[in-house]
Length: 102
Image (cartoon, rainbow, N blue to C red; front, side, top):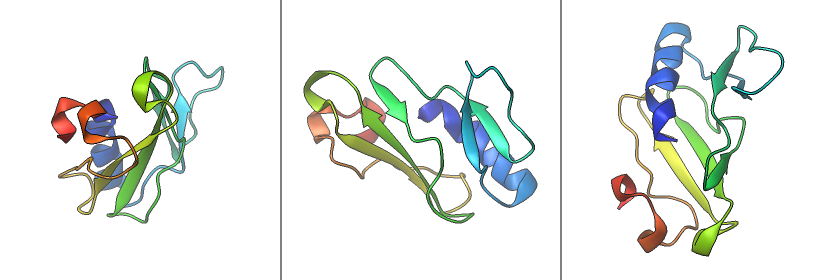
């Protein structure tokens, strides 16, 4: 999720809207003008392919796919178009969150 902060903020700044979809980097077809290419499946989680909210407010949801936090969610949220982000929401217990979220 952290790797999306910059690209999402830039997209929002340039277009004054969030992308309609996060297209996996492994997709056979690239993104259209309203989409953004992203790594959506990681070692421990899978990202929802859309953002919740209307620009400048947005939320990315990741669902954990292994370990003690399997099937739990974590959110990365912004209220200012991606200038600042927090990751305090979701159902992942604090002890299993990335260091940047503690």
